[in-house]
Image (tube, rainbow, N blue to C red; front, side):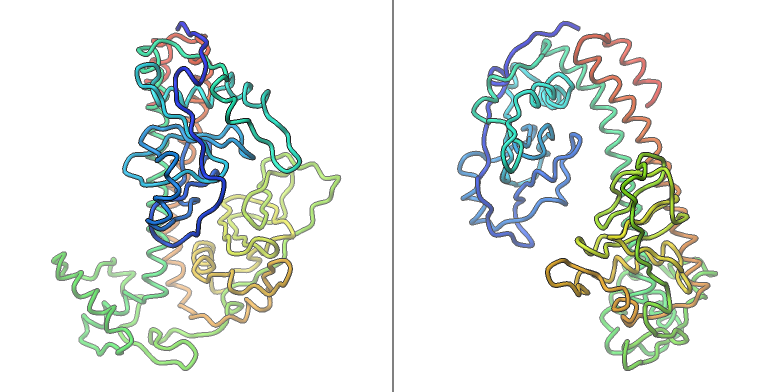
Length: 436
């Protein structure tokens, strides 16, 4: 594949983002964050929202359009992603935009070339290391050299690498759906008590006033779908009672269930120090307050396990499938008692742990404080049933992750060879056919 050297300015227009931060709100157009750029993907969950008034103000320079290449010119250098369709957004701080000249470059190919090894080396060769952050001079970017083949060749490369990326993205979306299903089921069973409401409706038992709205919603859902039987398998549905009892501390809870404190369900333990002399590359995850932070050649806790932030960052709850080392900035579930791994994971995620901050200068989650938070105590056999169901969802999730890792390895092997011309299109298409 023949490639010619050109410059960014010859194939795309370069735009700058705002140099300030607007007021953020819960709903509205996106204020894109450089944190949303990761390995060629745009994760909008890491971007804030702004008002319509602010949107007009922050798009005076440019409004991102479908297939623009978004990139970071400070701190997270080298990261880039395509702007998706149907999204209203403005550029965030430290973010720039390349608008491809369609008669010269295919947008997807431009993204791949930007992320390719040749252009990445160019970025870091021209990086200005300042006192606070590393950056590239945006005014110089149009002169950066980049290797671009003919447009037909670009489209062939885009089709090959794009097919891999598309399949990876489909698996990621499936995994997001599986995660949402597990979380929704936890809320339905252990927070909203939907199966108890269903049993009460079927038995003709009275529904407490506080639960009437939920009962009406359940009844309307069943009417709309034409369902005549209970939505759960009979052996699981019968694990739930058909009435409620009132408690002073927890309000209405299922009849026969108990209430207590979190320590009745599980025991949290502070993580472990990591000796400075210790070797930190290995197969076991190092879990920090914000999630995994590297690996280690030893582990302290057998998986599956749960960690959450103890100091620094609070509220991040992580499910760790295999053996791991929880660092001292975390709390980990030492004993599940009346809980279980998946139940404990979604229980802690539902608790909004950030509001239990007991620190002043540094956010801190006090273990004893959280242990004494009032909770409903479901029967153990119901917790086991939940874990059994969710484990099947996670089995599929892990299969998808393993497949994605294979696809990513193939993509990462093909991309630099295609960009440099070392690999011919027919050979790359054959390799693609073998993995898809």
